[in-house]
Image 1 (spheres, rainbow, N blue to C red):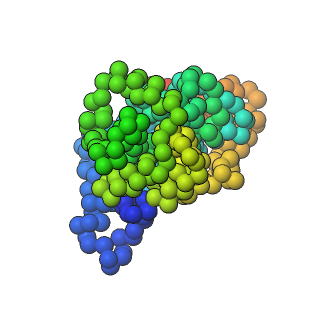
Image 2 (image 1 turned 60 degrees about the vertical axis):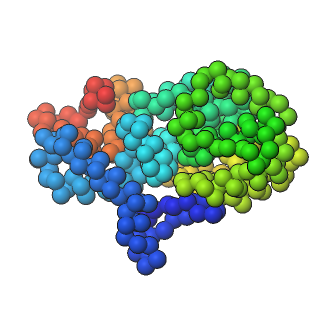
Image 3 (image 1 turned 45 degrees about the vertical axis):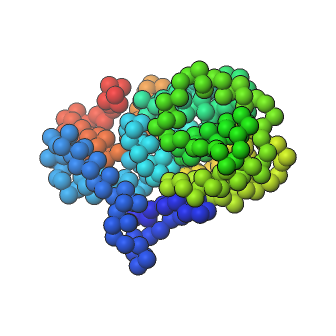
Length: 345
């Protein structure tokens, strides 16, 4: 398994076989111990389900799902946010599940996008969706409709680099208030989360002003990158964006980053924009589903479609769901493989 680590240019992937990487550093930066702990917790919580298949097979499927980025489906929000790999995996799952919305050209509201996210992660909060909408709409009224591609690239930036962007917002607010770059202090992520709602509303109104000097913001952000120990956008991307204008606001800065192909490549979750609507593997799954529906004129088309989509998502789900799903198929005496809605809760 490869892992990502923060470097001067943002996020760099390193391999466990590299002689330059000490074992303890690899274990820490790759989050292997986190996944091992979660695998054991899941095993203990659902041990009756795994007795039939065996522990070795369970661990093999768990880490295979982590490697293939299928492990985040239907997991809790805290788990999805726990590692950079989990975040990138969730972004990719969201794209694959709802890419057809982009192909149709349909526009959705912020709350509709949140509903889609909650189908994949039931406790997904509203705040990350609001932040993505603010990037797309440049902090205007966030109840306007958005295209799938605009929302997803903004969501990807905000979701993957959340802690870094929260700190950049504090830097921006200090500069907007007239503080010298030498006196700008970046608080911890904990103190950012504890800001009262009133302060957040006041900062939103402030950000509607003309913005700050890009060179000053670049200086502060570059200095912050030296101290920031987690993932951040490549410095060359941020510097390039800030060199293109005389004044810049926080959300115009983020929108430019969201559209930057180098950012997309650094995260590694989505294809480039020319291939954004192409996913041959998922297309094949959908074609098979449509074919099954078309050759069953006596069946309920809506019910068949829902059941087929559930089965397809189950195959992409975490190992706990995979094993549980197959076990039900094997033990059902009437040969039916259809599951009820309650099995997804």
